[in-house]
Length: 320
Image 1: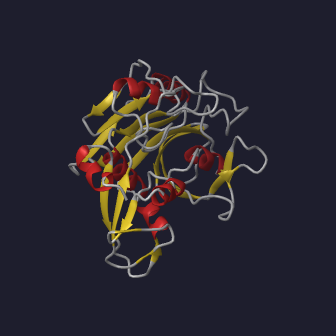
Image 2 (image 1 turned 45 degrees about the vertical axis):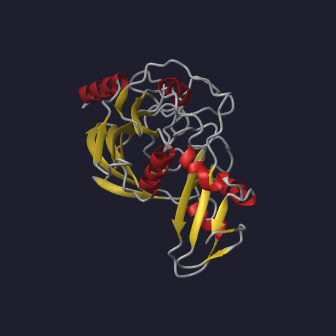
Image 3 (image 1 turned 120 degrees about the vertical axis):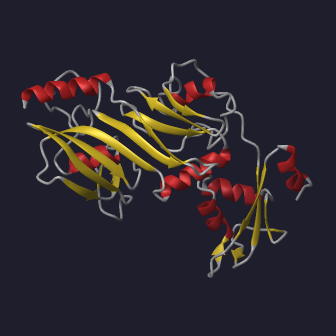
């Protein structure tokens, strides 16, 4: 282990973390570190260990080193890698809140959150890199600062971390349901009850790899969506949703699964007649509630519904 391991945190060349193992049963070092540092992949954690960046009780450790109650683990996280291929782009961001630790944005429809194959620029991340010069490197090469995602055509509240510490704490809040995400959507049809919960594992569609579907527990990941009927609109319904989990396309898949796909969804309500012209699904992340990652103050943010969503409601209410 180089001298840089113990000096790096103070010199700003990286981050030196001291963690303590408190479980009663032994556990492999690499598995436990992944559970403690969710923003890092297991592969990356193993690379840290192989590079000599991890010590257990002052001694260099291996991935399979068993941890026992009371062990002290020191992890040196190297400084963020530069992102030369992610270019900042000037963008008119609708900022709901910002301080030195986080930024909450009202995302418009048609804006992807981060680059992906075939969509390398013009994303929210590109705009944020122009707005927040210190963002590069946090949470991976293509998703700097991203705590959670919204689909490209889903609008509303999204929080981005501006430091690694804020990122980790916000991700933990999402995982432990301390943070609360609320959505509004107009769906086809009308549910028989006033409220309910949809539980169904979500995985790749068995025949269309571009879609997701409710699948068996063995083939998908557990997903839970709470819903409430807000307003009956003849052959349509305005509904609110609260997520316990955050799977890809979760609300859209669950709504389609129970026979009430979201109006305008090009993937899960294809060929359905639309009341007005829509460019995408009428799904809006209306409210985000979380604890500030540094001060722990409870904070609530709300994004007004987009004009097209409002216009749809006006049309449907006239039909009642």
